[in-house]
Image (spheres, rainbow over the protein chains, first blue to last red):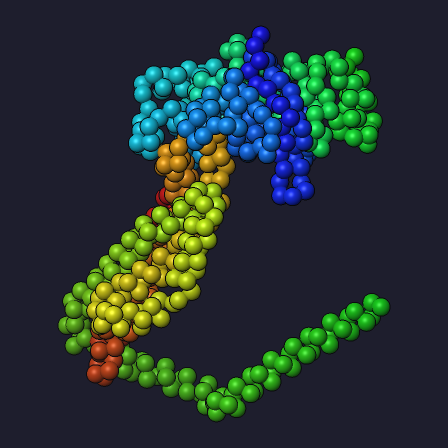
Length: 262
Length: 261
């Protein structure tokens, strides 16, 4: 499989002395399902947002599909973002609009300014949005306003909005952090399914180590802006978790680590 | 230690209280205000109001004139508010943290909004009196400037509060600036914006009366005209009409608010 994304010595500095990322290097192959785990404030969100330049990295190279995204100008950047879908912890939908309108927002990157302003979508785009919503089990809620949906349903709308972009890659920023276990499982299963059946590369930030180990092809552990683990889920044992989360990680990890690594 | 803490608190309260008494007493002495006479004159004032300040039959013949100026005043207030709202929306979008173009413009538009907001509409009408004279335009622009300043600030805050997250999401899809504004910012913040506009229409109708007295236009002018010519019954009719109009407008705007929110 070809390499889709590569980080080469990427650093990000806020102000003078706060380093969010330092010297991060890793590569992601096409179709891979990669989880990034690490404590809060380790730089997971920053890392994710550097890929589609919602945050600009300070130094290094980020190669996506053969081109360095750090060199992109405004127009190329827009084009890059259309090919990368993004999913957020708080869904980031327009709550007062209907499900279908929110999903179609994913097409705005492909439109002229005028068509975008007026919200003119073609018949195919609407059909595509509908079929994606059907895959995600939301066909009964198409015309409902998003503020009437549950958290899990809202997140599925978020996924649909990303998928309607026809992305090569999905960036998920803690997509299940605000959801109950059942809704979390549904979301993770959909994401896994998207990755395997549509061949879309998925990079996901997670707080739940057990979930990360269960669904991922690969785990990247981040601590204090550095990659401290990069490998298969099988390789994640107590030692590795302690290097990611710190030695204070405690007994619960022994149990969890033993359970999943075993 | 603890006893000290409470003693200190008591002492502080006592000092504040003493200071307040001293200030009140000082103000009364300086202005030579007779407190007892002030309060005893209230019943007299009420008595006078009831014996003179009520509309009689002759006053009712003025009703068509009064209603005409009332309509004019209300329309001027609405026109000033809606036009100001349009400019304020533009300024707020360009200046808010979420959708602003850059820091310089954002501070500039905040500064302009603060300046226009902090000059009261009454002060605006006096300033504008010089350039426009006793004209309906003076009142219109006084309301316009005050409203513009207030709404710019209110809109900015509503936009930042409501649409930050969805703006981030749409930027991540590669959508351009204007599609983001029209597809996300405006739909998300519309109820708040409308609510602020309705609030401003109400406030402006109240202000317009006062400004009318200052600038010699509208229903405020009619009131001061009747009052100064000792035609108290007609003046009282003007007051009643204004109060009724304000209550009706408030009822309508509350209804609209309930429907849109």
